[in-house]
Image (tube, rainbow, N blue to C red):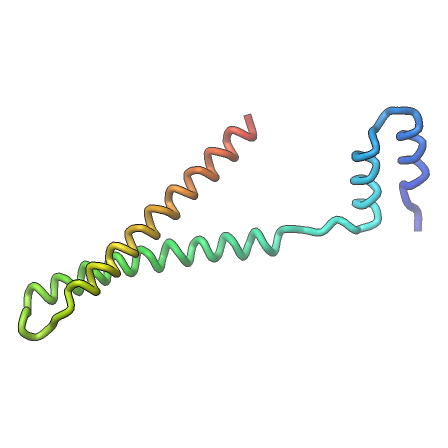
Length: 111
């Protein structure tokens, strides 16, 4: 199997590339570079799940509070429903803000 090690040594000796670039290219050639794809995909899925769970908690909390107010003798514990609704709102708004920051960073990084 042919490797680029001798070519990279020559380029580094001639000053065309620096040590860091040669090391990165050699690691890539050897297959030693690991991929973050799995971790990034897992993070994306977790973020989507958090947004969906936050929105569901927000919606279910609001629906539960409406039921408590509609039937006060039948249901109780409106405080727990309000707390769930607030937590859902915090998660949803926080994740939306994080998404906006990441998108902004990507757009500014590409410019």
